[in-house]
Amino acid sequence: MNERRITGLARRLGLAAKRRGVRVATAESCTGGGVAEAITRVSGSSDWFERGFVTYANLAKEEMLGVANATLVAHGAVSEEVAAEMAAGALERSAADASVAITGIAGPTGGTPAKPVGLVWFAWAARGAPVQCRRFLFKGDRAAVRRQSVAVALQGLIDLLA
Image 1 (cartoon, helix red, strand yellow):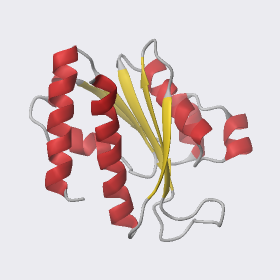
Image 2 (cartoon, one colour):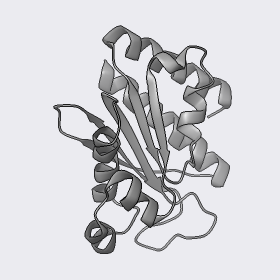
Image 3 (cartoon, one colour):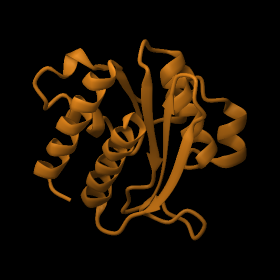
Image 4 (cartoon, one colour):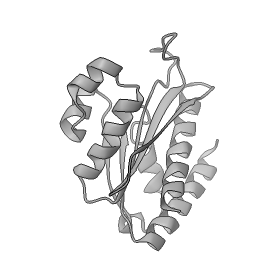
């Protein structure tokens, strides 16, 4: 996955968002704002990109996105449940119509046998529709895991808006 392909995905997302007349928000943890950065490479993205939340720490997930502390304690930050609450929270706390959430372990440290380095959970949400979650296990170094995560997040938004 390279930056040129990521920029192409961001352009495709912009076309889909404009065609549908929707605004998008991001809720990012392990990507540290990478999805928002890719989106804002596209000239005119202010027409369809509403905002990005970078919630690296658990407290930020709670305060900015309304993720329940009980969910974090029961499942851990890198989980389907937290990703779903992040995506829903991004919609609740913005004027966006669709959102994506990303939480994972980019490495090189932080992995466990149950949650290895490269494990990333995604959630996509649209107003009035159920949240969709997917789990990926990426290979590569920290930068590669993050690039792949940005690409999957963008492609999932494109698919959501199709």
